[in-house]
Image (cartoon, rainbow, N blue to C red; front, top):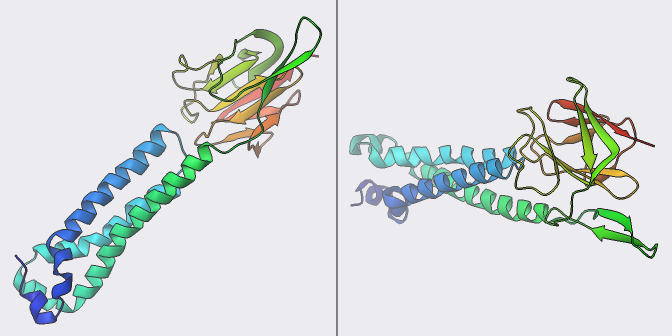
Length: 244
């Protein structure tokens, strides 16, 4: 039932929002907040800005909800703010919707963005050079190698590298490649990947939350490593060594 306050103030066209519209908006906003927070958390996407833009505007809907539930006497005392409460509530519902749409579109295209395609190089029986181009979905045979190592600069632990290597802190059993598990809470579940192309080792960040750094420089795409490079993963520092 509509409050007579809307008739008295000539805002009958806004009554729907204070009757059920603001409740609908707050419900949609809560769903979108959960979607952005949970999706970015489990996908380990660095989306703090989108989380804030989706969550904070929900506060703007509160004045309209308060106006809907207060007594008629209080409504009369603040009737001059009906239009303001409506505009704020509308923005509080629209901004999270727009933000979540942009988040979905951007990070979907981001995850599909084409970068330098790594490959594993080999020589067949006839002496011809072959290159097998790979991406994160490619299943290839993992070959133990002794040409490359990672050394944890804090613990001194040495990791022997293979042609495909997965670096992270979580459960890596389902991933294809040599698993290098770091006991570092600041490292993402799958933080970075390393491959050997037949001559050199390359590393790429796997959309981790904190990024991957080579000699204090944040990397993008695939980067070829040099002997002695320092790799920062989370708060773990690794020294890369490639045998001559």
